[in-house]
Length: 287
Image 1 (spheres, rainbow, N blue to C red):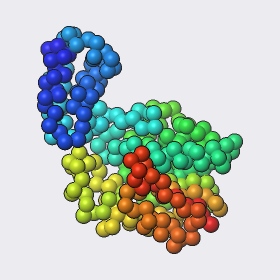
Image 2 (image 1 turned 90 degrees about the vertical axis):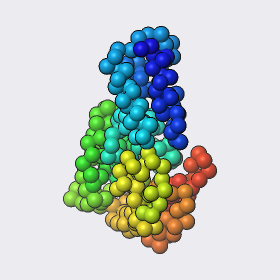
Image 3 (image 1 turned 60 degrees about the vertical axis):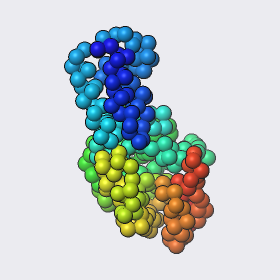
């Protein structure tokens, strides 16, 4: 079958998905199966596609039509200009999270330009936050912790993919992952994109998210704030004086997380908005 005809069939299969870009998704998937880029697909529409690839392409398009995320099919998601490997069991990186990473990079440049900076990421998932910081700031000594095996495996794959030797990954429940390393009072920056969806709201999320992404990475307890209440008090044990604690938050959680930071003695608390103008990041410094 010709590339053009096969692409059209693929688009027809997934064109009714509520969320997605059928033409782009079909093009990316066929390119991955053929091991060519988008430009090749666009300029070689008359080329014949081998029958086994035709079958595999149609099978995966059918899977996508049922809501299975295209990122898990492609095994890849771009974040901060880097192509991250992803698979089931890790949250798919979102552009919104770049707001947090970009602030951290600016903070490092402003305060630690020519000095080593110790950075901790709690709940690493694919490694999007911690590996981006490690990639773009070589003076960062990066630690990442996750409680589950799959994120640690995926983040390790991405660490090797980006050839990063300034990252150490540990398994554990938040700070328990590093509690035996003698790092109390050592971190200049602690970051987390914790689960923050209220439990009752998970069923209202789009099918791609609620049915296929890991619930443990979404469920923030009854009000979505469980992990902030756990992380904020204990972070003071590991932060240096004036150290930065920074979170991603839900669009309507800014005031609540700010209040938790204030109640725990944090200063210079600010809320940052994402590209859509929604509250997305809260940070404060240890008194």
